[in-house]
Length: 120
Image 1 (cartoon, rainbow, N blue to C red):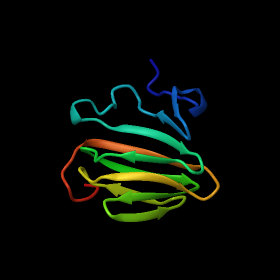
Image 2 (tube, rainbow, N blue to C red; image 1 turned 45 degrees about the horizontal axis):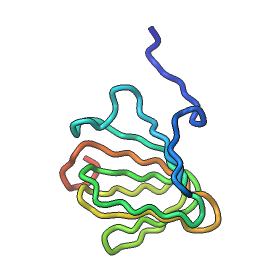
Image 3 (tube, helix red, strand yellow; image 1 turned 90 degrees about the horizontal axis):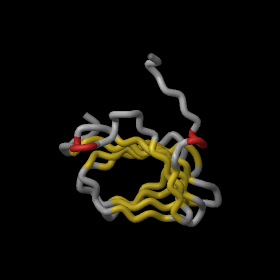
């Protein structure tokens, strides 16, 4: 039995909502069910797109692969570009918005319900 799985991103099930495309990248058994797993997703926001997200109960990492975006955290605006990583603590309200004329491509990783205090 193979101990690995290979998938091409363009062949995975994808949700499209207006200017946003989101693909779940989880392997079997990884889903954050009951607060104990991980949820990993690949997202593309087209120019002019924005996504409002209520506060998550989970730890969230947003890693920018390409393009530029703005993450609105409580009353702060952080502009991000390729190779930028933003950690969002549980309970922090945030929204995402594309900046510029190209797609903003990023990966989102959500962990189980966490305690405040960073990545650890």
